[in-house]
Image (cartoon, rainbow, N blue to C red; front, top):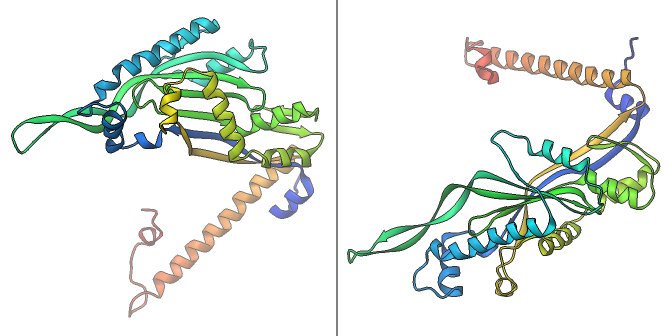
Length: 311
């Protein structure tokens, strides 16, 4: 079968579902005052009241945080999974999800050693000849704890904490999972793919729900789970301003298009390739013509590939 349409015609006539949605979002959770050497020093001296700033002053706090994680695992009857080097964490999650029946809760906790940017203490030499403790940033291999959970509004996600002061964290969620939870709560029928929708009984409603995933909802979702999971900062710390904030580390956006027939999807990709080849030939013709017109005596004799940047 030979079907020839331009790209606009193919999409207009043969796409039966089109949905724009946030896909995966990876967010930093950090304490703004503790992202610099000066901030760490102010925490140790101004807030904790020490004469000199040293990361050793956070050792007891770190031990208490790790102990609270261990106590939480025991109290909730959870499994602690020690991830191996090269192991795909998402594969472990998918296996656990098959037997996790609750619509909300912690599925399991994982721990892995990862290289993390952390503050450490060195010695700074003074003009008088003596030395004092001094805060610098470097990288270290430390334990990172992953809390894999399911939320009734957002679906599966994970929140991971570095076990080393100042306990930087990362939140990973999926906009398609959020959308499917919202559709299910409203009784709107849909057929899911591995990551997205194949069909939906009310596509305009699905698009509105997808567009409604806002900063405010993500913030409320994050705070909800901070209150449920072991937390490295006490209420007193948070009242003093030492509380987590979120920033976007990585955001992926998707445009899902479902075609009425597979052949039309293949035609779409073939047309994309063909149009790019035509554009490429036009580029080369333009470059070739530019070379011929360069210099006082016409063709300069320069290698076209070097001008095109292809080597």
